[in-house]
Image (cartoon, rainbow, N blue to C red; front, side, top):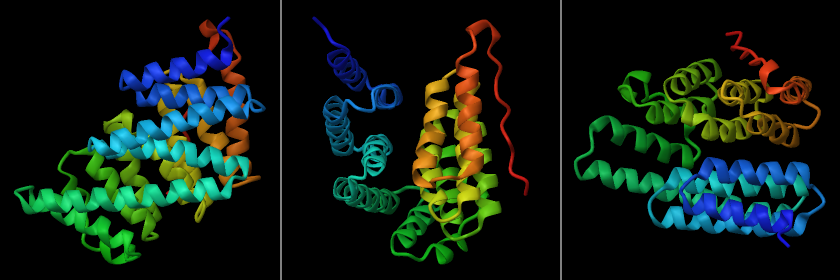
Length: 263
């Protein structure tokens, strides 16, 4: 007999093999939300995602690797597993530094000067000099590249330039909705220091998924945010709104409006 536990593990494994990082993560999030007491199965699936992250990192797919590792790290934080979360965060930090170094090497071997400056700025951030890095970056450097634009936005956010960073994130995700996952991850990082700014980032990611009727993914953004910033009322309200919308029959669902930044 195939149990739900076996099915979720097998299904997630097939999604990983098919290269569907977003769907594999969504399946994991769905399971831990619907079966919070089945930590044994959740642990097996989490280990699967970590292995997938290691494979992606080894093949140079840094963004995908960070998504896999970050979702498991956030889950362990929610469980109160500080040691497990810290171990994963250390791996995430090493991966981000390695990715920065790889970009620098690529720049030295012929990449455009803009990419070199962006990579150097990210290296500055890794060393704690976000303010200095932001001073050397402008949105024009992205030259129509939403991923590079998001990198510049992240550096501005870490430097405390919240209005500028939020505007750049909104611009980037508007050009490329596939940025919803990294924006959701960024909302947790920023939200730990600046809850209002982090919430607006969560709104941007959730908006992408609600417009595509991916209600579970949208709800998970605010579930993770509330776990990171307990008691943050706007996130709790939006979570209830999305859960209510998800329970309505398909033909009657409405798309929840995105709440744009006030400034």
